[in-house]
Every structure is written in structure tokens, then in C-alpha cells.
Amino acid sequence: MNYNKKSVLDIDVKGKRVLCRCDFNVPTKEGKITSDKRIVAALPTIEHLINNGARVILCSHMGKPKGEWKPELSLKIVAERLSELLGKEVIMAADVAGEDAKAKAAALNDGDVMLLENTRFIKGETKNDPELSKDLASMADIFVNDAFGTAHRAHSSTAGVADYLPAYCGLLVEKEVSIMGKALADPARPFVAILGGAKVSDKLNVINNLLEKVDTLIIGGGMAYTFQAAKGCNVGKSLLDTEKIDYCKEMMAKAEAKGVKLLLPVDVVVSESFPSPIDAPIEVKTVAVDSIPEDMEGMDIGEKTRELFAEAAKTAKTVVWNGPMGVFENPILAKGTIAVAQALADSDAVTIVGGGDSAAACEQLGFASEITHISTGGGASLEFLEGLELPGIACLQDK
Ligand code: ADP
Ligand code: MG
Image (tube, rainbow, N blue to C red; front, side, top):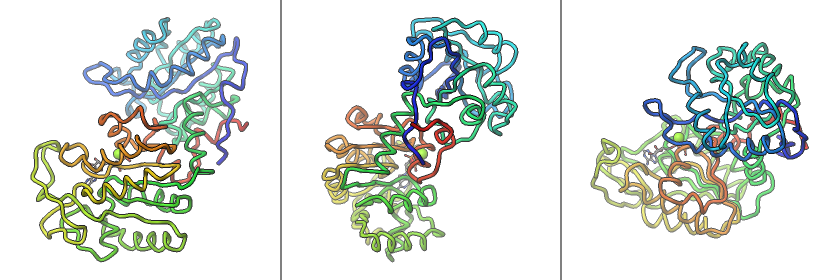
């Protein structure tokens, strides 16, 4: 995939109607936005368009209305918040690409901003229906994709519309693609990847692809136990993907053949049962990785492993991290994840965090500002690390 895409900075938008796909899929509770992070992240592109005299038509999905008109998933609350942040009116359309949206789009003046209704209110959106794509395109002269979070989906508003309009990336997508693209295509070395999270099966292709690129691959979190089992260790009641044991053997052989250093935990924090609720206090102890008691479950990496992983991260020039090292939602089991986040924060390397839970962990634990790039797309960043072509990026014009 070509990571070098033309952006809004490469084009003249004065007087042009620009359809801009954003990621306004914000979390809400009782009709109120609980985090406006995604709206804030979209501001640089929107402000650039306004300041350069574009007539801005924003669109996004929110939640999963599945083609039905669900008032509780209306983007009106986003228009209100965006209007506060921009300090100017955001015109709200009553539909997605219907009469009201079309009339309002036609009446825009230079520098005006409007927002279409939730694109997933229309069934055709997730089917990449050409009729919807054409309807959306008919309102604009230019398409800009600034929604990295949905770039791995081929939907009408993320990719289909680019069949009918010249298409460019926004500043957020440009940042995601250039930083992660460079890390994968031409990384400063040593290049270290740290993978964790619950299951091997969630990240099969990420492991496989990263082994082609990195100097060191570190595996922690719940997925490490399947690798331990593949090495013949007893893992007690720890998370185990029994069907993936052979796959882990294959990956260990691949690492060896490629000369990639594969680091696995040497000690683990175990407990008798999973905490319930997840942040409830629990009793834990640390054991060597080959001595997990039959009736206990590995929940975090131990202290020696923390040092081992942190050391590898500190000496790297590029670090990509995806997946927590333990059940970080519980403070007693967050030490491994904190150690890795701290190592990334302390490192001079280009540090990149992808994955929804890993990004949340960095933010919750207060390390976000010291990391080079925290991806705004969970699923999209994983597909990126898998080496897949993302439809919402592939459809944009190359430089
Ligand atoms: P990401 O969203 O960053 O890609 P994942 O969704 O793959 O990460 O994994 C995150 C989840 O993995 C967390 O909810 C965490 O509690 C869980 N997890 C990590 N280590 C373990 C473990 N040893 N046992 C059980 N669950 C674990
Ligand atoms: Mg997750």
C-alpha cells in the first residue's frame, strides 16, 4: 500500500464544497457526550478548511443504528459541541443525503460548516451502496477522509464516495498513515514490537506480519500463555487458545529462521480467580513462568519480565505497542502495563501505540503526552499492523 497520499494541504479548497468524513463516533451517556476527544482530534482539518474558504460538509457515523433512524444516535449533540469548539455555527442537516441536506449544502457560503445526520441511519452505508455514495458525492466537489477509525471499512462515506469525487486525506489521517506507514516500511532500528491483550487468535496476522519487519518481538498479556504452552509449559488456568498452539510453534520457528529475537515472560503474577468486578481487590503472587500452579491463573507479567521488556523497549529506535500486558483494568494487575507504558514514555525512540485498550491504558495511566503517536483507530490500526490495505486510505489520491 502507498502511504504517501495527497492531503488537504496539497489542494485549493476556496469556494469548493468539501465533503469531509470525520470520526465523530463519540461515547455518550444519557444523551450527553462523555468524551469529546474525537471531535477535538478533527478540529485541525475542519479549521484548515474553514480558514481556506471551503464550504464544509461534515459526515460521520455514531454507534450502530443498523440502517434505522434512531433519534438517540442523532449527531445533533456533536454539532452542538463542535459549534462550541469552533466558536461558530454548525448547520445541522435533518437527513444524510436527502432533500434537507442537499438544500443546505447548496446554500453554503465560503467558510460555512454543516453536519449531515448519522450515515449509518441509511442501510446502504455499510453495504457501500453506490446509490448512497453518488448521493453523498452529488453535494460536493471534493472528498476528504479524516476518519482513521473507520478507514478499514469499505462503506459509502469512507471509501465509496471516492469513486465519484477527487479524494484526499485530512490532517489526522495523514498523521496516522505517515507515522505508522514509515514505522512499517522504513523503521529506524532496532525496531521492537510489543504485543499483548487477551488472545492470540485476535492478533494472528499481526504477529505474522510483524515478524517480517521487527528486530525484536515481545509477547505479553493473555496471549503469552499459548506461546508458553507451545513451549511445553503448564499454564494452569491461564487464558489459552488451545487451537492456536501449533500456530505459536510456527511463529517461534519463523522468528528463529528470520533472526528475530522473541521475548516471552519469565515470571508471572497469578491469582486463584479472575477479579469480579474487574477492579475488585484480589490476592496475587509472582511465580516463575514454568511454575504456574495448576489451580491458578496468570494475570500480569512479573517484575523480572517488566525489567526485561522495559530494557528492550528503551534500547529501541522504533517501538510499536499493541495490547496490555495484564488485566490492567485492575490496579493490582496493571503493573506490567504501566512498566511498558513507562518504558515507552522514557524512550527516545519513535513510539507508537495502537489498539483501543492499549490507547485507553496509556491515557488512564497518564503516559499519553510522552508517546510519539497514539492511534485514534483501534481496529484500523490493527489492520494497518497486519499489513492490510485499508479501503478508506487506498481510495485517496497518491502524491
Ligand atoms: P487492544 O484493544 O489494545 O488491541 P485487546 O483488546 O487485545 O487490546 O486486549 C485487552 C484485554 O486483554 C484487556 O481487557 C485485558 O484485561 C486483557 N488481558 C490482558 N492480559 C490478560 C491476562 N493475562 N488474562 C486475561 N486477560 C488479559
Ligand atoms: Mg480491545
